[in-house]
Length: 239
Image (cartoon, rainbow, N blue to C red; front, side, top):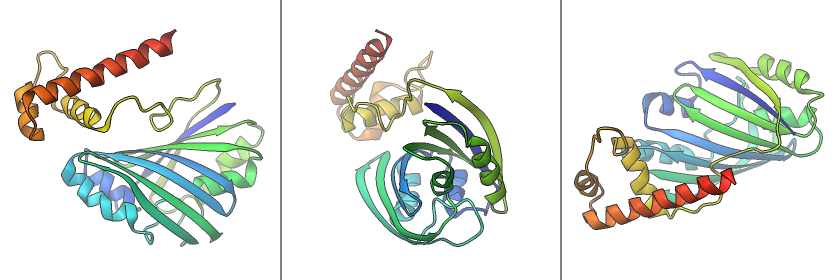
C-alpha cells in the first residue's frame, strides 16, 4: 500500500466551510472518505472544539446545500444527504452521502479517474489548512493525480506535496477501536485543553468539575478511566 499525502491551504473567503475553522481556533476535524465510483461518495466526519464554536459549525454540517468537498471554482451538480450521528458537548460526528454526481471536482472523485481498485481517504482540517492522506494499492498514476489536483485548484487555494510512502499500517482516530466512553472522552479532552496534564498544572479537578457542572468525584473517576484505557491501548500497540 502507498500513502500519498498533501495539503491544500485556503485564503480567507475562498471556502465557506474552511472560513469557520479559520475564525474559530478550537475547531478540529478528521474525516474518512470512500469513493465507490466517480459518481458516489460517502464521508464520516468528526469535528471537535469548544461548545460555542461547534454551535456555529452545526448548521454547515447538516446543510445539504453547502459544498464542503469541491476544490475548484466550478459549482457542483450532485445530490447530497447529511445526518448527525453523534452530538456531544465538544464533538460532532456527521455522515454525508453524495450521489448522482454530474460534475464536482473533489479529491476523491478526481482520484477515482486515475486509480483503479480500492482507495481510502483521510482528511483533517485545522485553521486554513486541509490535510489529505490517500491510501492506494498502486502508485503508478500518482504523478498524473498530482498534476491534475494542482491544476484543478480554485482561486485562493494552494497545493503542497508532503510525501509518497509505502506503508503496512495506517492509523486513524476514526478507524481505531472506541475504548473510551463518550462521557470519559469529554472530561479527558477538557483536561488536556485546560492544561491539567501540564507541569505545573494550569487547572484543578475542582475547576474542571465546575466547568462541566459535575461532582468532583465524577470528573476524577472519568479521567482515571479514560487515561487507563489509553494506557492499555498504547501498551497493546507496542506488543
